[in-house]
Amino acid sequence: MTLDDLLNKTCLIGLTYIAVNGDVLKQTQLAGTVVKIDEEEGLSVELMKIKGQKPQAEGEKPAIFHLPPLLEAWFVATPGHYKNEEHKVDIIDPDYFVTWDIVKKKDDTEEGVNEWWEWHPRLSSPSVN
Image (cartoon, rainbow, N blue to C red; front, side):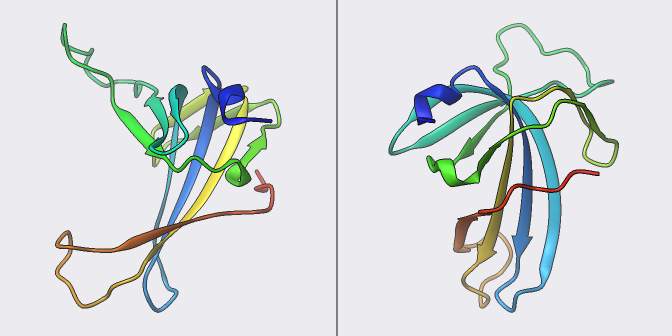
């Protein structure tokens, strides 16, 4: 598999945010379609519209989430209906599962001010219940 193979593929993204001390700060899920690939800038994923969300205004761009350009975090998804009410994810038969740990590297700043985060791909296929 190459990065180019991911273009126009759907994915279910699992993110775990981890504090400097190793505690899990939060976990979230997103779903979308890879719409752009850049070997330096990363992958741009157009997020799926959330059910019940107001329609996109004319000229308004869809939400884009950026992922690092590393294949290690990508796993072929098991077919199925994946729904997570808390994160408003509802996707049927995604092409891939994508999992990342995002680790805070600096603990002495106010939230949102010069925070440093490091992305680490999960290297084992996620288990799905």
